[in-house]
Image (cartoon, rainbow, N blue to C red; front, side, top):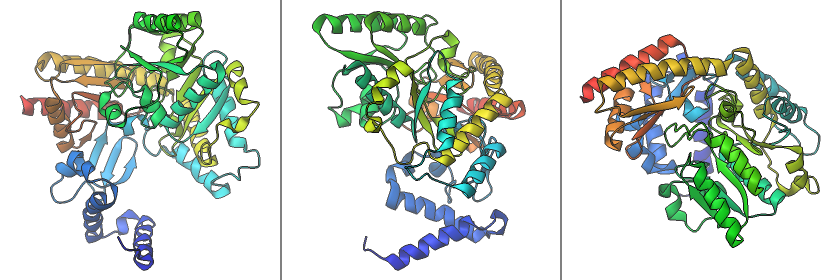
Length: 449
C-alpha cells in the first residue's frame, strides 16, 4: 500500500474518537460500521486465516461479533449482543474481566507514571518480587518480569543453561510452552514445530506423566555424555486438554532431577495463581521446582504480565552481569500495579478455594452429561477451573463449540483443534452463570444428537 500520512491520521483519529465516546452515545450505524470494518481490517492487515476459523465470524451472519464492553464473566459486542465467557482469555481472566480493584490500581498508576526511565530504581517491581517470594514454594526468592508466558519460558531456559553450564532439555509430549523459538523447541506438538525445524538442539520429549521415561532419558544422556540442563513440564497440561498427571509424577520428577543434578522447571503460566484450586499447580503435590514460570492471569486480565522466578543459589549466576537478560517494557509500573492488585484480590476473595469448589461442582455435572451423551462427550478431566472435555473427533468438538457460540457462550475450539475443549472461566464466576452454561451445553448436545 502507498504511504498516505493524511489518511493514517484520519483513521487513527476516527478510532480514538470512538474509544473516547461513551458506548451509549454511539449510533447503530457507527456500531455496524465498526463490526464490518473490523472483519475487513483482519482480512487486509492481520491474517485472513483468522476469519476462516473464528466462530465470531462464521456464525455471526452479516456482522462479525466485535468485542467491545466486558465485565466479570460477560462479554458484549459492539452491537449489544451478550455472551457468557467460559474461555477466560485462555486463562488471563482468573479474577474476572475488568475487576474494579485491579482497574483502579492501574488507573491510579497511569496518572503517576505509565513506564519507568530504565535508570532509577522502580519500587513496584521490587515490591511485587517480594510479595511473590512469600507466595512461592520453598526458597524461591528472585524474579524477572516480562510481558508474555513464552518470554518467561525463554528466560527460564537461559537461566537453567547459565546456572548448570549444560545445554539440553527434557520436555513433555503434547506440552505447550509458547511459540518463540526456544519455547517452541520444548513444545510437544508437531503442528507448530514441523514448519520451523530445525529448532534448538538437545531437546528430548517424553510422555507427560511418565516419570520412568524421564529417568530413562536422563540415564541415557548421562551414559553418552549429553548434558541436560533441566526437565520442563506444566503441572497440568492446559492446551492439551487439562491433562492431570498421576499423583506420583511430580514428586518423582523432583527426586529424579535431584539424583541426576538437573533443574526442574514448572511452567505455571496457565496453572498459576489459583486456576487449579491451589495457588500454584505444583502445590497439589507439595513439590518445589527450581524455576517457576508465571503468566496469563498474573496481570489480572488488565495488563500483560509474566515472570520467571528462582532461588538465590540459581539466581547468583546472573549477578556478575545483571544485563545478561533484560527487557524494556517487562515489569513496567502498570503491569506491576495490576499484578499486585490481582494478588490482593486473589487472597481476599480466596480465588483458589473458589476454583476448587466450583471446579468440583462442574466436574460432577459434566460427568452426568457424559453418562447421558456418551457418544458426544467421551471424557472429562481437570482440577479446579481448568477443565477439559474430550470429544470423539475435532468435528464433533467444533459442533459443540459452535453450538455453544450460537447459544451465546464463548469457549475454545476451532475448525482444526476442537477434540479437546477447555472450560476455564473466571474463578469468581457465579454458580448461577455456571448453571446456565451447563444448561446451554446440554441443549447443544441434544441438538447434535
